[in-house]
Image (cartoon, rainbow, N blue to C red; front, side):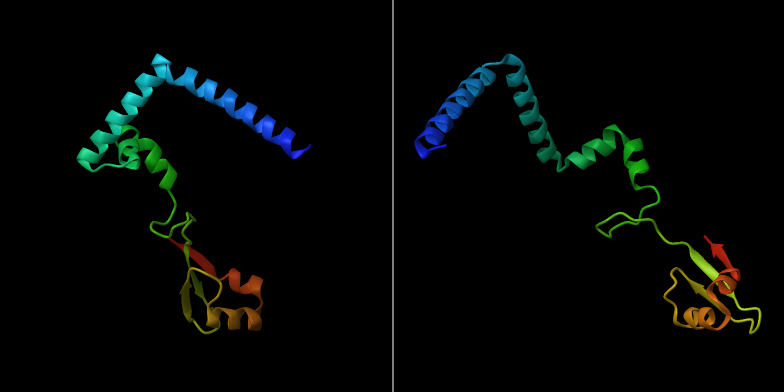
Length: 125
């Protein structure tokens, strides 16, 4: 497509969009919605509330269900890890950890095998 044809097509598209915008701006339903939004935002600013606060006020159940089982303040939601307690039957040593990156736990797994060491664990809430 030549540049002049592209220019004319763009100009025609702009003209059509401007007509659609003009028709929409005269719609009474749109006027009502815009007025409502403006009043709502003014009211929210007056009381220092955000959309999240309004959603929590109107539908508290949805807020609770969306954060159940998630950690707070991390920036990204993820499930909290459960603490595991490993008791070594050979030495009666106890290790409590939330992850498998524990130095002594790694040594146990290297010495007695991962499956054996995992059988020594119990989950603590």
